[in-house]
Length: 387
Image 1 (tube, rainbow, N blue to C red):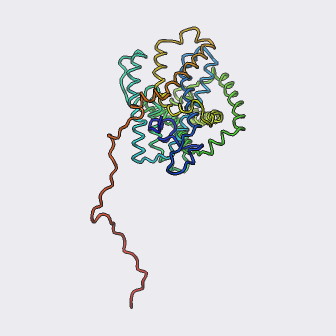
Image 2: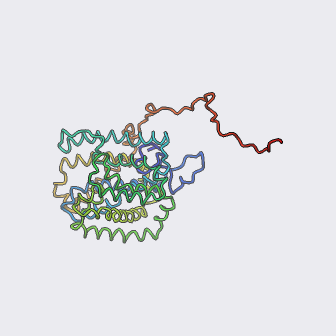
Image 3: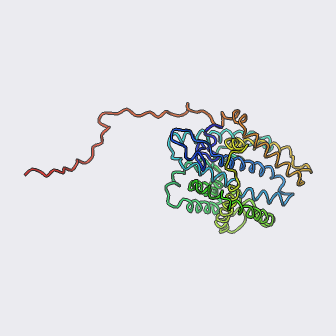
């Protein structure tokens, strides 16, 4: 993908060129190169997203799959959101940024919200499902949340303690079951701290987690997380990692909400650091696919919904370890294909639409006599009066 608007949804400030690598120090007037590290991170994360969705029908029959599913859900969306926040630091609500926000986030949201509604009328067997742009369906919640997060970016850039305030907002959301489904506000608020954290990060922070000491430490941490997750499967509801419900939904005391907000935030940050520490910083065969992760994200949902409609998971083979591995490989292959250039060319009209016709062109206002100069208080003379 060229430096289009759609990729802003997955960690690029429209151009997607700032970062920790060569692009960060490009000379003025010379186009900066994309940072391979962030493209690699986005591609690997979208593969995990697709695998996680493919594992969903297998959770009830496999404790190991459920444990792996829980660990992946603990960090793959936080990683995406942190990167999105990092590349949103320059969002200033200027006319050009607003235009790109509309064409790169709002338009895809409207298109895919409508498309998913029609598609799931068939796949879910609900022919009367209504189109509701205020109630994000399936994967479109992220676009609705990103729109809100981006619009509030100038606020988080100005307040003195942005991350503690965002954590407080997320904690209060868990105490507010009355928050409705409009724009999936519950999930938007609970994931907010990750976006705000991304706004606070600098290239040095990403360089820090890529040190060899961190990489070595990440291996036992990830192994420990898998072991703990396997132990916790019958003892803990992994739906906490979805960040879409209040404490009341889990039938626990209210004080669990703020406590779980802090605990999950710390857990997710550790796993995100472990994940990013092993993301290659050099160009790989899949690096260019990182520019098309929004395509893979939104399009693979149709494949998942169709496969679930045909009840593929009822086959005995897929309930075995070899079947789960096969499902993972197929999911990774499908989402990889959906990130490729030919697919992006086909769907660019709705993901990166050229909507210059819909926006006014900024024109300097002509000077008007009598209005150019605003009179102020008379200048104070420094010459003493004549006597």
